[in-house]
Image (cartoon, rainbow over the protein chains, first blue to last red):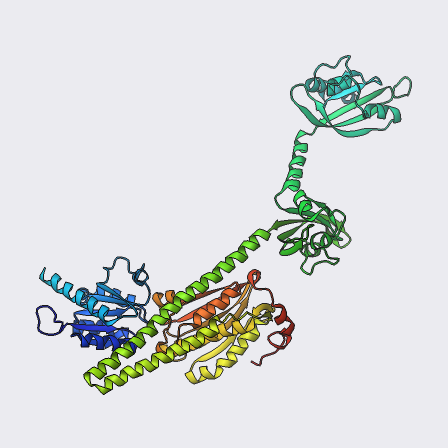
Length: 139
Length: 496
């Protein structure tokens, strides 16, 4: 079981994707690999949910209708309450296209996952982000 | 007054602002004024051909001798050797002087005007007309070529005296859109693109501007008697434009393929997820989870199936059937098609069709698909917005350069991120309901018409899609489609 640093509880992840199937898939895969995962398909709910639950990391689909993943990313990064939470961008387009050029001065995401996502790759990226986050806390 | 006359007789000769001389029948200068001396130097006892031409014998055609012989004045343009400088253009007038004693004509009065400046202007005009890097043609009211410049002659052959349509179009009747005829009618300036044929039988495209050259008085007021046409050859430009259009079409195919890959990624991930969730449910002994995995598989297989079907329709290489089509008729068909759906969705659907739209070469079926797609999207956007009193408007418009369609909705609108992606990826905002192919297909069809599709949207306020089809880039009617056109979009009236 993947534990968040300094606690016995599993690392808690929030999966944001407008496609319910992808949310179900990623959450199941994460839970099967020792994480606690929750999913949300409506991006509008995300800022409040993140402030309230303070997940250890967020998997964010960049291309969603209505409020785009990029706008959401910007909101999360600019809000001091959520700015420190690692964000892994889930993208169907190439990494260079995902955040350019609108992201501008925003800090880069903590990780990228390009669709389609195989479970080992998912676990590898999430573990590395959580580990790095823990190291940063102790640094 | 006698005093003034005496004064003039005494001084006029010397004070006249022109070189003047008196010549005898032997062509010797017997008297000359100060201006002559100033212009041509010493004259006394010398022959005119020596002074003015630096010749040792009389000129081959001598106006002085001719006037002495017949007593008639003569005026001619000539180049004379001035005192300091090269031969200079003059207009020379010779007038036989009667002898007070004999009554015969033993002398000639010779006068010359320096026309260097006028001549230079004339030369400039000549060069401008003759060597201009475009076709220049002067036409009379009968549309006969009065003059044509070198470039026009080189391309179309000598045409002076022939009708312009014979020279430039190889036909025996005036063109329907003749800018020269319009100038003769209204005295204005008119421009139009033309397709002609060179002397060598090559199709030549040019843009011609016709302007009045000479106006004359007539019983009904002033009228244009000659028209000058200046035409720029755009054959090469047209070929480039076609190449660009082709490149755009190829680029659209490339973007479509890229978009397809993106769409497939999502479906593949849905299938991957279904397999995983099914396996996870089975491993955990959680039937509900396993069932959800199965449902994911089913849903995504359905999506793949729909996508493949759409793709076949998209890419099986349907050849656009271009006919002369009434754009309003296509718009009315789409309005009719979606009237019921819009009513059920609580959305007001209305048409604002430009009156007097002329028919244009369009792929009616393709354009119908475009508009149907945009109207369908607009109705969806209204439903998503959950705003009351949403409205979708389908407009047609036309100006001298283009025609087109607009679909406006007051629905949910799109933010920058969504707008940026709608044509470049296999993007859908419809979740389970869309394959993301609709707008790609729309764009492909619009590009096949040489046009562009523009989007303007604001989140929460609505969206406007505009299809602009420049007339100059519209495709040529498909021959077999043109034969069958009468029964489709050519003449049929579609009920409102």
